[in-house]
Length: 383
Picture 1 (tube, rainbow, N blue to C red):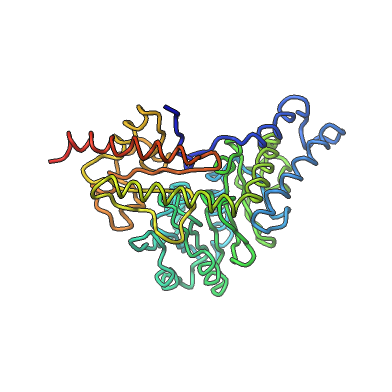
Picture 2: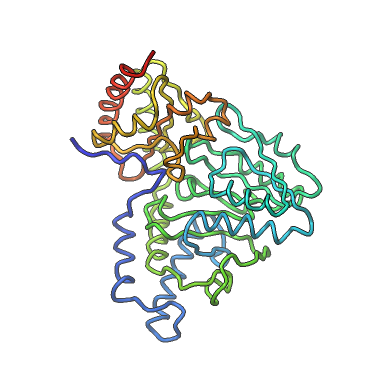
């Protein structure tokens, strides 16, 4: 049977176009983009072209976009940078209870340095309460950081409303858009976003490259001190091949975004309809509206999500029980418990996530394999 990769929320395969774009810069055009000679200048031009390709996805100017090693670095730079930039004005930050640990852990670090963090609740569908967020604002609030779309459930947050609230109160607004970038439309200007993080490996670029949008006029302190790279804001020789591949991936994803979103949404709903038809008692954790096109999260009562993932693996279907960054943790998903699921339901969660290489045949295979895995596991675990 064909193997099915359905864990694209964890990482995607590099696209053929992105791989072809980067290969020359791994071998023949290997010069340092900071070098003054013609070989270096040639690489620099390719890097700057990639910067423009990537910036156009979110409608920002290319000089507002800084390349990093990925989403975790970008989140740390934005959150810690904004906090220390504004600390003389206040030390209060607002976030949500469903953020990725690449946001939650930098905030925990700031708490040790005297910052106060307000964690906003979400409703049963996983959406942040805008009203609760606005009520949490204090005179000393200096930053709001709320993810664009949740990596576990796919719930797209009310980013534009939050951005307007932040603007009205003169507060910096950062969004972790790692799961949303190149998958759904984003305009940092109309959405009043001050900082935005993204990572290439979530949209068919290589691992180890990402970026941070910083609105012009916001001067964050450096997270990594070194040379003059990235306008003297992020030291270290650029990952030129990775950046060039990411630019190509971003260009292609932007061109295909609407069509691909429609296709993946159809596959998502086909899978959900099939699972509800074949598995009694299944719980849908992915919201019905305002959700990422290619994410399906369900809970299976009387089953452990990790056990189901292992059984699927034996059948050549690769899924997950939550965020890859928390693999090995015995705690239930903080996202699902924040939505009101009890520990048993949260432990029984399985996530399927798709990308441009997912075909209808893959959905059919999941619908054939997954219900049978549930039946076998329930036979030995159900009281």
